[in-house]
Image (cartoon, rainbow, N blue to C red; front, top):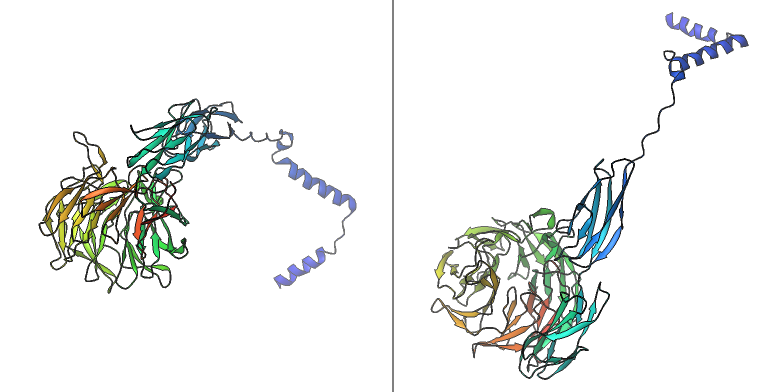
Length: 579
């Protein structure tokens, strides 16, 4: 009944008719209620407009500079009476800027950096200018050349960022040949390594040099197809079909001095003389290991990771491992190591297992390990084996003809000097035994098994007498398994570290690159226990890879970490080059 009455009232309400005057009074009353609100709002002034936002503009908004030079910047602040700003550089190690806005470009880095002016009235208001720091102040061409005795070469130089582009030409070594004012160089009759230097006339601190290899050798390097991605401290593995797998490698983060790994990989085809993509690693890596297994797959283990995990100037080591399958050109995860490792060694044993030894816990620093483990391809798992007597990374491991493994040198931690100690791993007992020590302590050296079963140890970083510093060494020594001892052999013509050493089919060992911008190469002859100069590379390399191909030539690839290299070269016996 109530609902019926309600509906009835509604229906009757719709039939009510109001006089027009009554309607006007009702509307006026409603308008009056809207406008009242206590009887004072209608007389209030309109609200004030919001204050203008604070903005910061930096002038100039972009600049191109040379390393170590200065550039003043100015900041204009609007929207506030406080026009003060705080200056900063967005990238770590991207240069410095003082409180007055004078920016100084970094001495040891190049790339694009960003100068930032932050309003002191509101830290959310910023102005940014982009600064392009040029890679080079003076470029010389060619950067390296191989000549016969008394040969000739014309050099050119280009100066960037200076009004006067003239240079003077000199030769660093006494007796290193002659050069005139136009850059025409005449080599000496004596074999050796020499350097032509170009110096800016306007600023004598701006210089560049080229390395000249003078040799009677007809062997040398010729260029081949470049990597698709520049990389250094990568791995290079000769596959069963003759191709070469280049995996991972180092690069510098764009905004820091942190070096991290990359995940890409590529394969070099000898017939085409070119690299092609080969799938991606499951993790970015550098200073890792890659070992060709007896089943044709490649075990990739450890290494330092990508720059997202950067600690100070280095990234953390990782314990992951993966397998590359040439049949599918793909990487797949396998069992993890028991310990994160980078700068370690991995050695294929005669029983098909892989011995992984030592390694550091952080790139650019950190602490080494004495532990070791074995990878079993049949189970895809790592198991612990005996530990070394000394913690070490940046060492070498060499499979001896008797099936044992020689471990040599390295450092226990980044702040320590290299060690001269060595030890031998016996797969039969799963243990390490200390053997005779080297005559020179060293890290980042090479160790090469010679045809007679002895091991050639070459170069590396060694302590400086009376100092805590290290420097590359030209020394070399031979390990004799029959006497478990080291003995000195002939020295190289050039000190080297992070070089490569490749045993050639004829029994000699090719030593290439190593050190700063070193393009030179030498051959060690075990029959004479001496080194001789051979044709040099076209560019200097350190931390590169060298792989003996099935045709007896050597593929040299990449190199570098802060500024990795993409080019590649082939070393060939009797390779032609211009005199």
